[in-house]
Image (cartoon, rainbow, N blue to C red; front, side):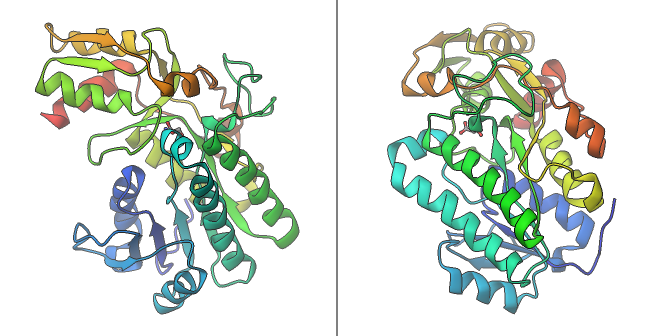
Length: 314
Ligand code: SER
């Protein structure tokens, strides 16, 4: 791994599901004095790090934060997720796209050197092959979030090709974690289910029992993020976003796994509007390019993820 200890790193959206855990790992790599947390909401959760209240749509404020802290790298994690963006399409589009442009432009103007921006399995759509979905395939997303991710991927590659911007990206599956709550995603049931299993031993799922989706345990997602950001630039041969795969399962399967630990756990199903979103996404992902280009490898399967989630939440 190429780690430049003096590089100052900014996480935008540091209070979110990914940000909280990425910050911990970046603190280990760079030292907390070199990692700056930013979020749209004031927070005192970041006692070891400098913290900035920042609206990524405010370009002047963003530049001020970058200059003031001598930032070299930005991890842009502020976005509206799939379910929330469907409720506020124009704001979802604006935040997800203009936020990306504001950060990419800083790199184009050489104010910063490297950008991380997450894409998602939501960039695929109903016409995409659902099983073992390859890196290169039909992509016709039907959600605002998915459209913003697909367009964002194209813009990342464009900024790389035209302006030499060093931007790197992953198509995250649904992310499962215990340290911070997810917000507004279609895959969030796979987090809520653990909280309810421990609290009430029952869970009403907003997706049907057979809805298989690609998922990943957060430690794997953080590992992939750190790995792609620290791989030599020549190894990053895809400047849109890389497929990465973890675990694929449906609500029935995760419930069965939870039952091995909590035998009287029960699940019921009441699909809502998120079912329609989930039905447009792949069920499993082929990530051979990430494995070959920068040696990505996931560690967790369904049993080890469930075991870890339950013991940490207890
Ligand atoms: N987990 C995200 C969502 O459900 C997908 O990237 O919106």
